Length: 387
Image (tube, rainbow, N blue to C red; front, side, top):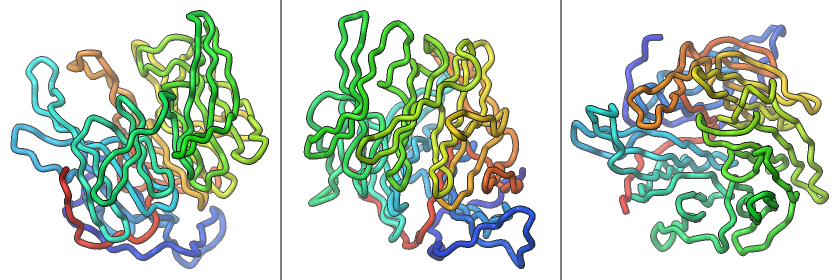
């Protein structure tokens, strides 16, 4: 794919309402908007593009990040993109790197960037945390502690009380895990915790030597707040121990029923979660997984009738929307020989694929290592407020 020209500017997009999805096999007069997609490019920038229901784009992609300015040879890369449930807000990390003879590059600084998608206003915060997600319109970040961003009278972080480990956000606060152990057995309380400190226990996990902990993993709450996807495993990326991660799905309503999805493939394959997303009005969970070893594979699976089914082999990430669309990015995991820890990086190998109602529609003329739907109005010239 030859990348189109990039323009560093905000873009005005018509609000997406009363959309009519394109159903495969049914004649339609014309394609309709599927939504607006944010994606991190191979060069580490964040672009926006309108996607139509047949996989075509409504115009050329528009670059919105990085916004951090540095002088050569330093450069900036975008990662950790999160979007609020109503898609009013976005946030991401901007890592400042410089070339290094031994490791290829070293990180020399970082920023968290928050963007109001309605008027384009941008707030830049210099710190050592990364975005976890939004609780309503409040950004929650993780570093040494869990903190929420308060925008008035000027942007500042407020630490959440306690020392539980936050794994996701929901409309009233965070999903966290409070742990106690004696070295042989851990008791981990999975909770909904409000910003005022009220706790609702979802489940008490008793963890032995199977390494299927619920702390320090990748979890997700659906945009409508009705479903929670929990990873159970030892998520240390490519140095993790123990079997493939198990997955539990909770309905976030009184009683909080749990459905155990188990794991994909075999225990010995050591599958870990890379991305969790929800597709359609029924919040069907789609997961991008990777294993680890001398070579690393990536797949996308979806939860159907309480089991995980393969969607695409050789894929690195996925993004779903409540309208029923999903974008699957073909790719592979490549060993970074210059990394001091010899990590693997996700690398796209073909154009992203648009799906609807579990059927593949066709390719989109973009490639991204991270994908997020950002429906709504994005306009305004934007401004920067460094702190």
